[in-house]
Image (tube, rainbow, N blue to C red; front, side, top):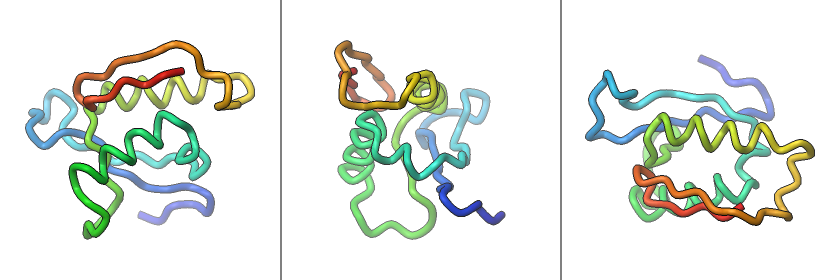
Length: 100
């Protein structure tokens, strides 16, 4: 399936999750999300888990539910300014603490 210009297809999920728990799912996100600190931390974690040379789509090692929450956090920012982050979220499945 083709992805529109300015968007990126990713795979999210943990291989040990059952299909009923979300499994691995494909999402299409705006490329601009990759500059958000939350996604930057997930990309760093993806590098730790998968390395840089992986065949296929970009994979994020995070549960689908946690990714959906992270995406919701990004989308709810009124001006999507990522410079004034002041609280913290912890996502066990991603093994991340995200400061915002």
